[in-house]
Amino acid sequence: MSIMQLSVFLENKLGRLKEVLNILSNNNINIRALSLAEKSSYGMLRLIVCDSEKAMEILKKENIAVNTASVIAVGVSDKPGGLLEIVNLLEKNSINVEYLYAFVDKSGDKAVVVLRVEDISRAEKIFSENGVKMLSEKDVKSF
Image (tube, rainbow, N blue to C red; front, side, top):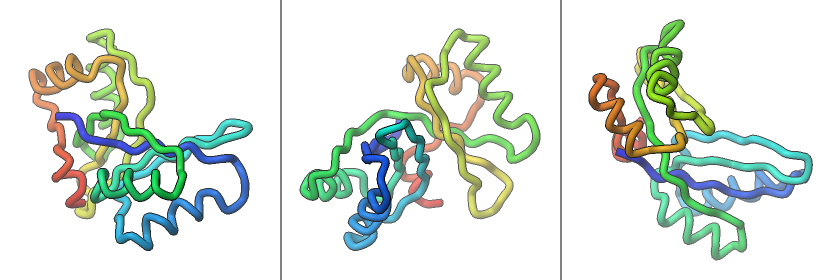
């Protein structure tokens, strides 16, 4: 049950992040989760938003370099070792984690981990077989 993530390439200069956030805000696109990683000359802004297709269309229209990627969102216990259980399961099955980021749901008892892995289909199967709750786009967007 993969979900769509937007990946926005940003020049590593003052105001570039603000520009993208203004575009999304002005078009009523709510950000549900995000991660920003930097390199020397550019940054990678990864976003889960309330309306991925609309956001993609708007950003492209504004000449913002944006792509989509399939990721998996899973619910984990918000306690020490919650994330470790997921990572152990993937490692045990030889599935490499390319990157991840997380946020806590509003009730505060669960964390949501967004994962990009080498083999999404296999990871979904393993999570399903081991009772790991995968979240749909609708689930993530309702937080």
